[in-house]
Image (cartoon, rainbow, N blue to C red; front, side, top):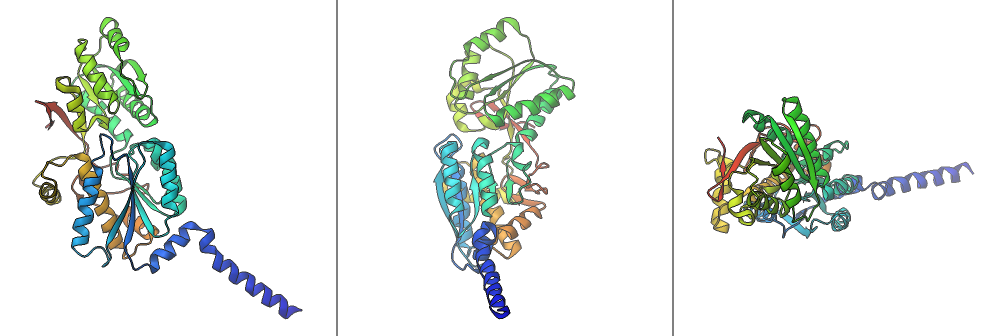
Length: 381
């Protein structure tokens, strides 16, 4: 009887060991990655037809460059591309699809924070490294995730930077206008808090719905009843351009200081002459003195015959960051990739220098300023 009990116990323990990876998605993915010999698979999800859809050109450029030089660890990179269409439901579906792709080791993307936040939870549970070049919500790094990274400044960093700029310009009385979306509302909150810390007075704060096109009542009210030195606009396209055009047409003359939602050439095209003078954060500086920028610029202009913009460079950097982490880790196991990313200090990319903190954020990455002048973006010195 004792012998049979031992046999049964041994078989039961073996079954636990055999089933453990299947019951633990992170472990299963890590074991599969350790034994893989084919292409290194990365997912890319974004709103490709949006105003910031240029990310794909940067991703494709980096993929071609890396694969042409032999890949990473003598393996080629391969991207599975999906369009979340800025839809929460579509984003959830894609995140689950990627989570169920056993050979995938990392995901780049999700432009919008309201899509990225639930997607990040799915990727974390599935054992996938998730790197977003777009979602700005500071909450992304308050969840205790060890596989989630951001390569663009957070809404907190941008709100603080734009408040600093206003104070430096001598503006004392300011107003806030933001789109009713979590990330933009949070940016407005960070801006307001820091502005007050700097001694600025917030004389009015209002919001508008996503998709709004008529801002005349708010603008007229400001023209008639309020006096302030500048307006902070935490909006996105196409609403941001519509507001700026309408405000200037109605005689609203206060300087407009924007978040990064209007950092796209489509803003200038849509707002026309009204875009002149609008100040925005700059996270991609054209600086030929930086070798990483010069290489990217040469490759991009040769391939696409046009000048690169912010999201082109962000897509390019995202792929190279993952590739260098795989190289440093000497492994495609997502947990090892994540450890290498966390250890990244002073890595130079097309958009500047990267150093991740223990939360996967880049709080020390500089944010510059640019202004629309003569129908194009110009760096503010």
